[in-house]
Length: 83
Image (cartoon, rainbow, N blue to C red; front, side):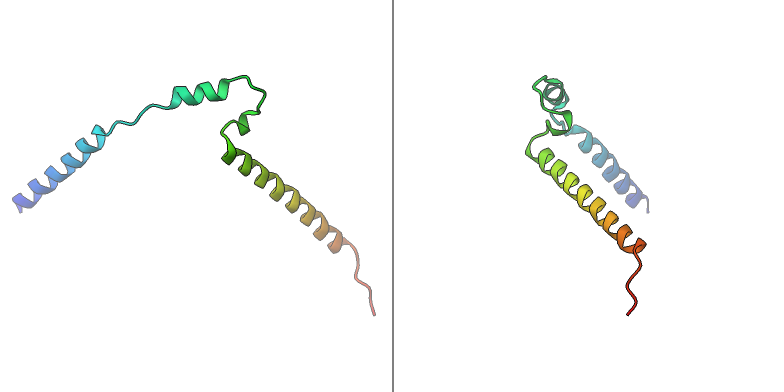
């Protein structure tokens, strides 16, 4: 029993210490430079092609959803013809 607890404690300590050893490069200054650059591009598009695609998809879905909602409101407000 004691041996299991010691083994568990060793694994837990090893996991914590090895996780903190991994060093990642700090890319924040590069991103700050990119987003603060005065190049006439709106901030929501400065991320590149992915941002442009997400923006266009959002605009298309918003316009399409608004048009569909207006169509459904019009259909709901107009009475159907009685035969």
